[in-house]
Amino acid sequence: MNVASPPWLVVVDLQRAFADPGSPWFTPGVASVAGVVGDLAPRFGARVVFTRFVPPSKAEGSWRLYYKRWRFAAGTRDSERWSIIEPWDRAVSVSSHTFSKWVPELQALVGPHPTIVLCGVSTDCCVLATAFAAVDAGVQLRVVADACAAKTPELHEAALQMMRCRAPQLTVVTSRQERDGVID
Image (cartoon, rainbow, N blue to C red):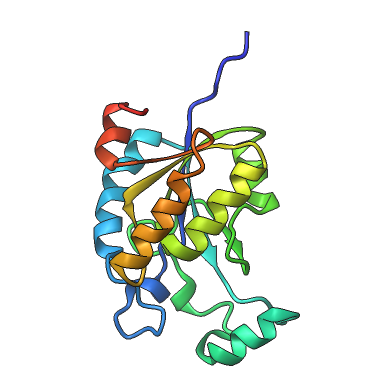
């Protein structure tokens, strides 16, 4: 008999670079996302991991053009802007310089074929990239819509719609559905 292990909560890039209104990468809605994460995280106990976007030590390939556009971020791997926001600044985290956070370190942490509840920023970039990569790897995934944010409501909704089309491997839920265990 194959018994499913409890799900993991994976919180994508809830970092100062996206929470600070003075940052070029400021994402409106981060405070709201943090509130929902604060409600959800205790329900997962030790099965919570945060991801962090950090620039590579050396930009290669298409990343050279990316950091030419976003010069403020280039070569600043240790900057405070890449810290997870409080109160999770000391939580278990996985770092990556790619949009997708489905990297070997995260895979090793959650184990083979886990169920993941995914949230964070930005819905239309790192959340979406992580979701698709994880599903490709055989992960059963739930994205918590109201625990995600993008630069605009339109981008947020467009990304959610793309993910809704990937059922049954990937489902989009609300925090209430996740909290109450009402998952379609």
